[in-house]
Structure formats: C-alpha cells, structure tokens
Length: 195
Image (cartoon, rainbow, N blue to C red; front, side, top):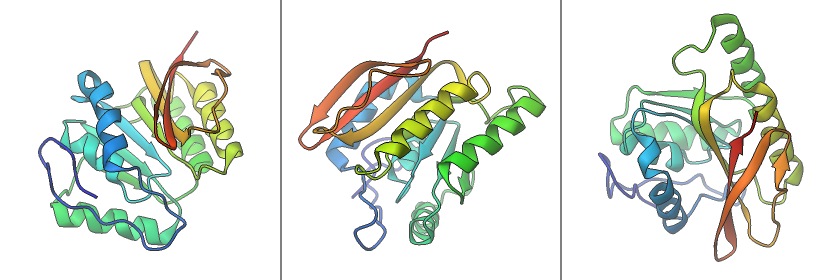
C-alpha cells in the first residue's frame, strides 16, 4: 500500500495486522481521488472508520487543509499514528479515538456551540465500515444528514465504500445518492445533501 499522488507520492503505508481491517486498495483510492481532485485543495476531509489512515493521508498529500481520522480499534489507531510519523506529518490532522457515532455527536455539539468553526464542518466525508455492517452505513449516513449544516459544509460530498454486491439505499434522510462507481468487489457511492 502506498500514497498515490501529491506531496507524499509513492511513499509506503503500513496496514493494521489481522483481518479486522480491510484497507481501501490503491486502485480504488486512485479512482476515488480522481473523482475528488477538483474538491480536495483546502478542504476539511473526514475519514470515518479510518483503518490505516490511507484515505485521509492521501487527502493531506493532495492538499486538504485538515483531516479528521475516526477510528476506535487500538491496532488501527497505532497504525495511523505510525503512518503519520513515518511520513513526518505533524499537523493538519485530528485523530478521534472513539466510535463514529460518538465522534459525530461530539463534533455536532461543538459546532453548534461555536458556530461553523474552522475544521468542524466537513467538505468531504469518506466512510468505509466493515462491509458486513449494514447498520453502520445507515447510522453514519443518517447522523451526517441530521448534523448538517453543523457537520457538513455547503456543497459537501459524502462517499461510502461498500461491497458491490450490497448496494446502499438511494437516500438516507436528506443525503441522496448521485453516483455509484463499481470496481471489482467494491463500490463507491456518492451522496449529496438536499435541503
């Protein structure tokens, strides 16, 4: 696994040991960031269920201003910290060592209290829970929709990676699927917020 492009291009990344984490493949990450390329510069990017942190690190490499990595598995958090350290990345990120639900609740409360503070409202959100955890997709997508505009900046895009054989719904509250790209066993579904 490696960083595909940008400042840290071609640098290797570690993945957590074991079978509990399924890193997004280099090929799928390249497809994702080819689509997101015009939106990355200066964006606030959230990587939910971050695993190795590869997606968030790719966003930083390509010019995101800040990334939020949400992960509650200790081996994965250790891997994220190791990858950031190996690359010499010391700022521009926040690691949330708790569940996605708890993190989104906390950020929504902070954002409501402080207004749309820098680093609180996301321009881009990527979520990649375990494929078999259908409830996690629904919970996270509904929570993001309910938390807008505190969690989602105007024009935000939410992308979910999932098994291509298990399509997601067309709508989760005010988040509507606008596009799905399939690559082998994996798919990327793109959601936009509708008022």
